[in-house]
Length: 447
Ligand SMILES: *[C@@H]1O[C@H](CO)[C@@H](O)[C@H](O)[C@H]1NC(C)=O
Image (cartoon, rainbow, N blue to C red):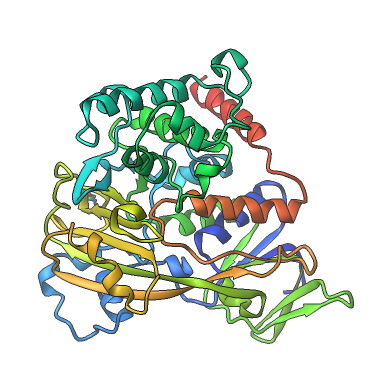
């Protein structure tokens, strides 16, 4: 290991893999190591026996679950927004050539004890069971405004400067009640709390547009999920890395780092050897001393023999339970995937219920979500500490990601990836450049 690397990446979680891919594509020499013998770290995918063993149920009889090799259960499943940043980064790095994505059937929201489809088009808004007749029209008016709104075209602004007007003011202008605000903020704009209401409305309108543009691509829902589960992603990045002369190594114990006099990292030691590097990117488990605990997440992975009730027999779906609907401070998330995405044996479904822990009885907090699932054949519950880095890494060139939160989509994951990438490069991420490059790719592949 006497070569010098631009970057050494520790851990093969999704955030580390995307950053590794971005660095490789920009010509950096990358060494990627994981202390585990499997890919994915905290968000690994598991075969059926592995899953039972992971949760201390090694002696359970698994003969009733169909072919074991058909199972690929994510410990932390999440959906990708079809028009979102993660999909763009996957296309940009070229890792999509190793993966196959399939749309998710349905996007739902919980209101007053019932599950409702999140309206993704004007027609759906007008036929939605979520709202009364007058509310529907007012919501449609907001939708039309959002669809039309272009940041750089003042004639679409209807006299509203959304960098100043707050979302509260916009809701008031369209006379939208608390129920509509709940599903707009939490199931469409995907906010985790209500702080956005007092912020300028532009960010929320952009998030609404992301949701609707994503739906427009695939009709049923704005979400995508890879065939065979999220475990395919790190493996795709490992194959990609090889093309750029990078190296992925599993089963590499982490034995510490070396530093220069000014404290900046100069190398990573494993099995008695030190590989030199300029920067290190790592998941929080490698540098607990550079992290602080920021709460906990409770998750229940449930195996079902039926789709989630009230989702129109969706073989994959997400239900968001906004905090206000169940008197909580954090939303509860329900996600369901199945054999349709090749993550379970035929006719089996894998559901996840998750939320941010607020009490000393975390499992009970999942109850409003669990109640939506119907009979559950097997349940695996975990409570994980959430770690966030205490600094941005610029001082010692060690960039640490945050743990995965309770959300069942990748939007917050992307924010973290972009934040770390900006710290590493020292300048803001150029999204318009990314869009331009993707457009060039498209022209190349179509022409
Ligand atoms: C993947 O799932 C589809 C749909 O259930 C099924 O037809 C196909 O055989 C599966 N592929 C493999 C390799 O198991």
